Image 1 (tube, rainbow, N blue to C red):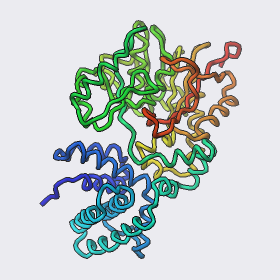
Image 2 (image 1 turned 180 degrees about the horizontal axis):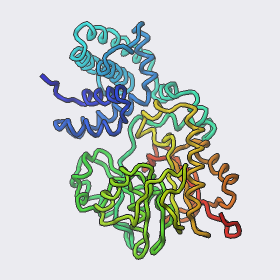
Image 3 (image 1 turned 90 degrees about the vertical axis):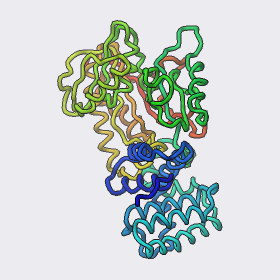
Image 4 (image 1 turned 180 degrees about the vertical axis):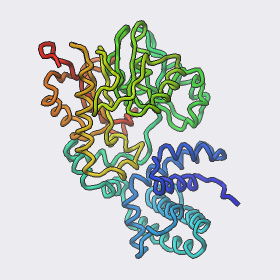
Length: 453
C-alpha cells in the first residue's frame, strides 16, 4: 500500500529526484506538492524548508552521517539516503521538531524503501547524529560555509569581500518569498495600488503574509500563500509570479511609450511582458531566446495578459544575430549565468557548478552583449544583467566589453520608478524585510555618438 504523503516524504521524493535525474529542486518540489493534495499549508511550508535547507548543507550533512557510517551512505537506495539526510538536517537545525520524532519517521521511510536491516542501520546512525547535534550545537552558517566548494568561496570573497561573503553564505535556510508583479501601474501622484490588494490577498489566504516589495514599485511579496493561481485576481491576469529582482531588471531598461525594445535573452517572458506594457501605446517589443520552444511558451504567457511581442526570434547570439536585423531604442540582455545570486531559492545550483564554468560563462556573456549591442541605435541604451554576485560575470564582463566593443560607453544605471542612481550591484542582507531573492548585477551601456559600431 502506498505511503500517505507527509512533508518529509515529499521532501525525500524531491531529494531523490535531484540526485537520480539531476532534476532542478524547485520544479520537482512544485510538482510533488501539487501531487500531495492532502498536505495543509503548514506541511507544504515544512516540506519546502526541508528541501532547501538540506540542499544548502548537503555535503556537511553527509559528512556528519558518515562519522558513524564507516562505509558511507553512497550505496543506499536514493530515497533511503534522502530520508537519512533529512533527519540529520532536522535533528541538527530544526529544534522545534523533537529529535526522536525526526529519527522515527526517517527510520520508517528507510525501512519502507530498503527493508528492516537498513532501517536498523539508519536508526543507530541517526541517534548518534542527534547526540552529536545536542552536544556540539553546530550553526547553520558554519554548515553552509563548509558545504560550499572552495573555488566558489574564493569567488565570493573576490566579489563581496570577506565580510560580505560570510554574510552571503550564512543567509538563512528559509527560501525567499514569492514575488508577484501587479499589472496595475501607479498613477502619477496617486495612491499605490498595491496597498488595496494586500487586504484582499490576506482575506483569501489568512495564514499567509503579504508585503510590498522594497525594490520594485510593482512587487508584492508572498509567503505561505499556497497556489498563487487560486488568489483573487490571478485568473484575470491582474498579477503574475515574477521575482522582484527580475522586475527590477526590466524596469531598469526604462522603456517608454512608442519605443522599440529588444529582449535579447527572453526566457519565460516575464520581463518581455513588463516591457510590452511599458512601451504602450505605439511601441513594440521583440523577444529572442536560444530555444524556439521557450519562445512558444513565452507567447502563450504574454497573451494571458492581453499582450504580445511583435516578433520572436530563435537566436544563438554567440554565433550571430540570426534573423534580427533592426535597431532598437533599448536592448535588454539578462544573460545566462551561474545563478549564484539565486542560491536561496535554487540551492542545488551550487552542487552543479564547477570552477571552470566561470570562464566559459563569462566569455559567453561578453559574446552575447557585444553582438546584441550591434542592434542598439546611436544614443540608445543596452542594459546587461545577471543573477550572479561573482565579479567574473559582472564587473569583469563590463571590463572585457570595453576592449571588445569600445563603441559602448558604460554609464550609471537609473531604475525606472525610483529616484537616484540604482547601484550596479544589488544584494541586500537576506534578513532585511523585502530582501530580493535574485541578487543582480546591472550595467547600462550606450553606443558612443561619436564612435559608430
